[in-house]
Length: 153
Image (cartoon, rainbow, N blue to C red; front, top):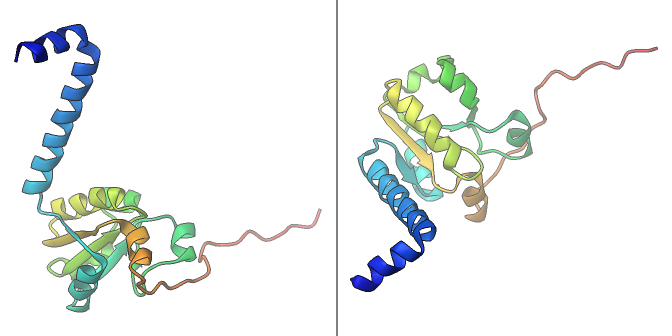
């Protein structure tokens, strides 16, 4: 024990950093433990959505057009923050699985949806990267963003 105290006093910056990492790790574990939002594997997410749920993709329209889960709804995180979720109203008590590239941003969206009263919100663990990695099907479509017309000069 004396060696630990001696090390901590001689290397106080490193000790403070390790303590900070430990606190953040414990806080993350506690937050996930008491969160109403669950993480689902691609297979679990498919089963949940096939029972009357929906995938909500929060990536950009460009990323969505490059590959998305079939029948997923594209709703930006900004729209979720502002409460613009009219197309999700019928899924208030149905399973909703949020998707982003890696799963981190989707957790924020899922927490906002849960706070807005959606009862069965989950996150696709690992995002679209894990979906593709699991060999699950991906749909592609051209971007529906309005294209600018070329003007003659």
